[in-house]
Image (cartoon, rainbow, N blue to C red; front, side, top):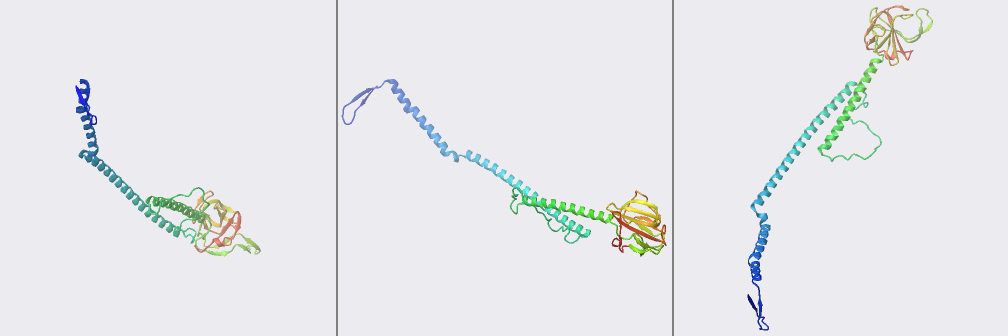
Length: 308
């Protein structure tokens, strides 16, 4: 094949010869390869441009968004259920705190505690140096923080109730083991504690107890709880009962007609232990009541009162 090339400025003609293989290759490039490349580029460009507006693509995005929305709704419902449960628990704890406070105040009143000795309506007095980092609690209004605070108050109230119970038990034990009251049914003091004229000799002598005149056979009761350490005849005392109360106190009930307890027996406060008589060194039916503290006789006057 021959190709003539004629430049404009010279007007001369140049002849060029191309082989058939070159001509075929050039034709393939022009009519086949180039259109294919252009078509591929146009397809990819169209996919890039039209992709977001493709109905299938939009449907897929819509489905994914719907799944995410349902998950968010489910998470919100779970959170609301959890908050409702916490609020319900908070209400129950607050009601329990109110009942515990009311019970504590009632116990304090029933116990007859001195004003200010145990005030259940006030927070317990606390103190001490601070060590370590301070606890950073949640902000006000946070239900979790309120629950933590309420749980702390519950623990404090239980500790206060335990202290109150211990205090009441101690008081009950102290009251039960401390001789007080009136050891017989009826009667009156016929001879006091201290120096007096001896009824048999007329001389001045020390009287180590209190004589309570009464009818023969009148019940004699223990002035406090304890253990019988003596029950029988004793010189000068006649038929006598002695009770140890375990806190340094010992009581003696002398000149009795008969006893109802034995040595080693545990007796309760107010329990009948004997009956009034006139045994031993006695001028008539009466009870000689004697109070010893740490082995030494003391004046029982302040332990005797009109609860007879």
